[in-house]
Length: 206
Image (cartoon, rainbow, N blue to C red):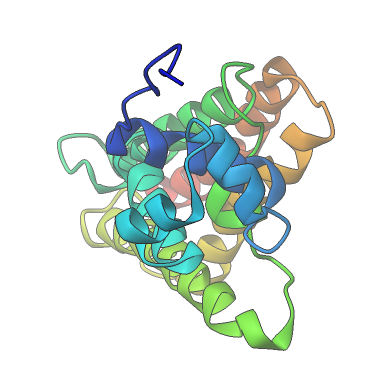
């Protein structure tokens, strides 16, 4: 019996994006192979493994896709053409804006997709912690630059300020998932940056 239609062509790039959105919404462990295969155009298990080898390998590609696209909002922290304050403030506002948009799952994939998982998936949690640690490192470098160039006083407690900014940054994810609107987070960022202003004033006075 002749076929009545031709199966949809498999597009690997589109498949990775579809997987990214699923992992972002449901997390690594809760996203099933069946969900992934359906999102990729109802491909067979054989086609899935031929293209990606494993769910974990696909997840790693999805994380890379996220970092290269939506995750670019954090790049502001590395922008040395801006003052450190402007770099951090811009990064926080861009992050809040991106994570509250309705065109994709709310929050941050790196924060939400494997905060808890079974012991067998501990390496997935550690992989994402490493990625989050990279962003924390950018914040640390940015604040250290502010101290070095006089934006902040020498006596600034850098580890405390890094923890304050990074805690707020990662907290955006749960706030976004809980439905807190961008406007509320934007106002909170303004309040948060007043801490920087206070420290900066002390620097100018001294």
